[in-house]
Length: 325
Ligand SMILES: [Fe+2]
Ligand SMILES: [Fe+2]
Image (tube, rainbow, N blue to C red; front, side, top):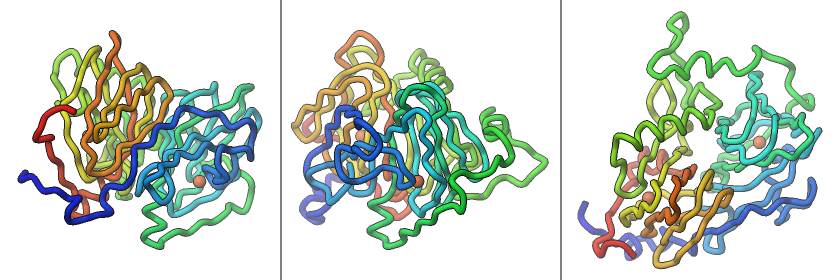
């Protein structure tokens, strides 16, 4: 791709600095680090903020930390915002999405598509914490935000427990006795970490991976192969011990959550050290490169607005002409 300096043609494209949010634990429900809640139904949240964006961790995405205390229930509701949770800590909790009950254990990615009823509960004796990411800034910009409370606190037991795993997690196989799901989001709402890690390990043993991201995998809609939601793409990557990726930039913004390991990311000349359970973001069109400076693999989960940028024809990517920072 020919080098084009988007800053010269689009002054608002890249705003402010990257977020660096160490995991901060709200003391109790209602005592969030900022005055804004995470999931509107309840539960406390540390809201990822970025001094260069109007609100949220990135111009199109929220990346918050939400906590649900033992015995707490987040009452059922739905909204235009597409949302997802990546479970960070806890024993056993569950979320109900449109009548399906999904367990939530550390490392799980759980999808709550736009306008789906959802409620959450923590039945354990310890708090459950998750990365809570939504496309809320984009929804606000587009002026399409709607929200509705469910008539009752929780949804009644529906079809049962997470049958999407049994139906769609076999890879390239789906139930043939019914039409293929045609929703714009994935029909598989829960993606366990052990499956992702097994795939990362297999590929790390055999492939070089991406020069910019190491071994990186996208969580996909098993029917279409596309992103899990039309507005948010989800990825997980493995940086090998000592790996230092090449430098590039792209028009998608990215929010990262460190699952395992530690290292640092250079973003437009700024070094951001990160370790397990940290959250940070890379703004659109900012040069960045990742470094795993330790002697064991680093596993990093990320969310991006790349499906939106690609769908509109606005996605572009550029390798750094001057090499690493
Ligand atoms: Fe919600
Ligand atoms: Fe990148």
